Image (tube, rainbow, N blue to C red):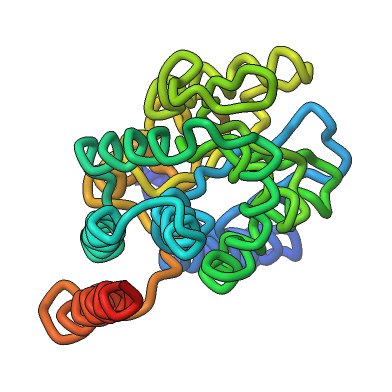
Length: 308
């Protein structure tokens, strides 16, 4: 039997070292259970925009991103008030603006029609005259339509010491007025041809829209020695995906359906500053919006007829 003694467990009193080992093992087991039950804290998001990064800048689309509605349509209202065109043109501008605000997307045919109308309207007028009128129209129709949320985003870049540019299909003269009034660096916009300071009614190249915006941003970044991977861009429209894709920090602001879907697929940041948008799509506010524009147009037409 003695030969089998090694199979029999021996009773030994616990030493201080064995007690310490047991307690350490129990504590490790308890911690591992707690860690499994509690997800690790999310890492803090790095500060953005980065203060003092002079190789970064921000590029903002204008229509429905910085401002409610389309700048070109507001400009058209101001020109009508100053007798630049007839009542039938006002009705077309009003319908296009109503459609744009309620649909929240750019219709290429509407935008092309508006551009053609604007070019024919300004033909023969001096550039300086339109720039001066643009200042007045900003106060009359645009200032109250700036989205405060987007304005705050632009200001954050300015406060970080970065340049901020508007990038829009609107005429560059109007875009520059808006940029100046908002305290931004400048604006990229559609350039209308002028000779000796007078508009010819033609464009230089094509409207700054879609891929043309991306090319303008690329050219400006090269001239300003910017690192596009450190830059930000903001837009509401899927038409601006080429511009948004250029930068390291793309934002979808008040996005249309296609841009919202694309932004989610790409994990881009989204911001929506519209209020009551879902309600507008189902009826009452939408109808009220159309009615207000139609009513304003009808009143303007009636007034025009009485004056005649």
